[in-house]
Image (cartoon, rainbow, N blue to C red):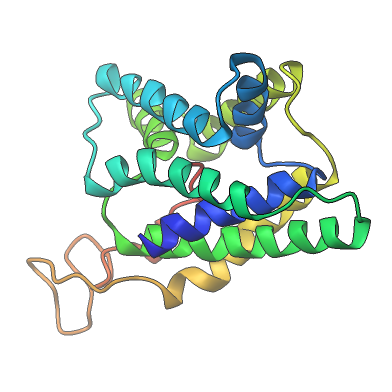
Length: 214
């Protein structure tokens, strides 16, 4: 829950910076403006809707999936109630940079817990497994689609959107090895790997997941 809470707080920081959001949050903000809902409630609703897309893909949610769907939205609304709106550019830049770094750490904590993918990540991996299209192509197509829809609906796109796209991968790469929860698995060898090539932490270094988009 620490990772999910930090994710919601970092998301709120990016929103308050008004300098640009990641693609899924561009969609959340755009939809919230039209529906009259809070951003947190909109985030939960989108997550629940995306979960419906898991059904034809034969994806199954884990405990972390349910927690991701609900708690990030709750944490985001709580943080937005505390973080004030500001028009001071230095403060906005501080919010943006802190939010991106915090999001990278939150993503590593969440992925490292190995309790199940978030709804958006599960959709991505499900499409990959069902279609055979690479993760990179599926992820890019999904994020460009939601970014375009979100921008059309009035979501915040800006320099922060580009900085997030460039920075989140390296940040996750730096944080993730320190956040993986070690899991014992059947067939673990003395060297710490299973027959399938994963580490005792349960994540395969060669196929470590991409940043989650809750």
